[in-house]
Amino acid sequence: MGKNLAEKILQRHSPEILRGPGQIIPCRVSLVLANDITAPLSIDSFRKMGAKKVFDPGKIALVCDHFTPNKDIASAEQVKKVRLFAREMGITHYYEGGTSGVEHALLPELGLVGPGDIVVGADSHTCTYGGLGAFATGMGSTDIAAAMALGETWFKVPESIKVRITGELGPYITAKDLILNLIGRIKVDGALYKALEFSGPVLDRLDAEARMTMANMAIEAGAKAGLFPVDVITLDYCRTHGRNDLNTLQPDHDAAYCLLMDMDVSGMPPQVACPHLPDNVKAVDELKEIRVDQVVLGSCTNGRISDLRQAAQIIREHKVDKGVRFIVLPATPKIYAQALEEGLLEIFMRAGAIIGPPTCGPCLGGHMGILAGGEKCLATTNRNFKGRMGSLDSEVYLGSPYVAAATAVAGRIIHPERI
Image (cartoon, rainbow, N blue to C red; front, side, top):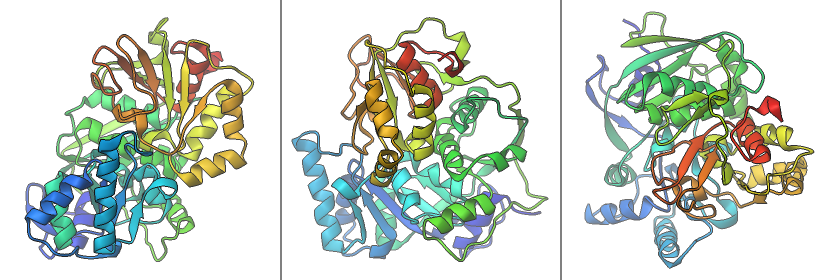
C-alpha cells in the first residue's frame, strides 16, 4: 500500500517504520514556533522541565505578533519575557517591532518553512504551511517546550481525507471561498485529527499564497493538517524565498484515504461564514441587508499582497461607507512596503480606510479593532466564534478580500460584482 502526503512526510522524519493511521511515532522537527501569547507559557514549562538550552537555536522561531505593538503593560511584559529568553538561548529567529509580522505570513516569506518539513507551533493556525507541502500543526505550549528542548515530538499518524477540486473558478472566487465552502460541507469537526489533502485540476490555478489560505483554515474543520502536493508552483515560491534543493512531493497512486470528497466549483458564488461558527456558510446573495460597523482586511489567512490587490481592485475609485471602520493590516513589513510601492495603501487611504501595522490585532480580539455590543464585522480572518473580536454581543462574518472591500463600500454584506 502506498502512502499519502501526511504519511510520506512523517516517515521522512521518523526512525520507525510507519505502518498506517493510529500508530504513535516519534519525529524530528524542522522548526518550532511560538508567539507572544503562547511562548511565555512554553518558557515556563521549559524551565520546569529543567532544560538548560534549546536543541538548535536556528530551528526555533519566536514571533511577537498578536498584541504588537504592545497594547498594555501585560502584553509588554509578555514580549519582554520572550525577548530575554531569545537572548539567553541565542535564538536566531526572534521577531519583534519592525522586523515582525503575522507569524504564518512571515515565516514562509523568510524561507523558514517549506516542502517536506515538520513544523510544530504553539498556535492552531500553524497548519498554514501545509500550503507549501509541510506537515505543520498546532500544539499546546507544554508540548512546544519539550520540542524546543529535544528537537522532536510524537504524533498519532492521522487518517487522511482527499479533497478533489474540479470545475472553473468564476469571477471574484478565491481560495477563501473554496475553503469556506468545504468547511460548510464537512462542519467544524468533520476532519477531527485527520489530514485534509487537496488535489484536482483547480490546484493548477491556485498560487502558493492561495494554497496557504486554504491550509490555514484546515483547523476550522478540526484537521490536524492541511496538505497540498509539492509541484512547480510550490518550488517556484520557495526558491524565490530562499529555499533551494527541493523536490516535488506527490501522494502514491495507491495511497489510502478514509474519505474521498469531490468539489465542483463551477458556478460557486462568493461564500460567507455567518455567526458564530466557520461552518455556518452561506452564499453572499443569501445575506440580505446585513449592515456592518467594521470590516477587517488582514490576518494570517488573507493579509498577503495578493489579498490586498484583490481588495484594492474593488475599492479603487470608491469611498468607505461613513458608518464603517475599514481596517487594513498588511501581514508583514515586506508586504506593507510592497503595497506602498504599488500604490495600494494610497488607494485604501483615499477611500477612507485605516491602515495599521503588521499585527494579528482584531482577529483574536486583541486590539486595534475591538467590537462593541451589537456591532457587526465582516473580516477576512479565520474565526467567528462568539466574542472572538470583542463583545459577546457582537457578530463576525468571514469572507474573501473581494467581499470585504465591497462590504466596506456598501456598508452591508454584498456581492463584489455589485460595486
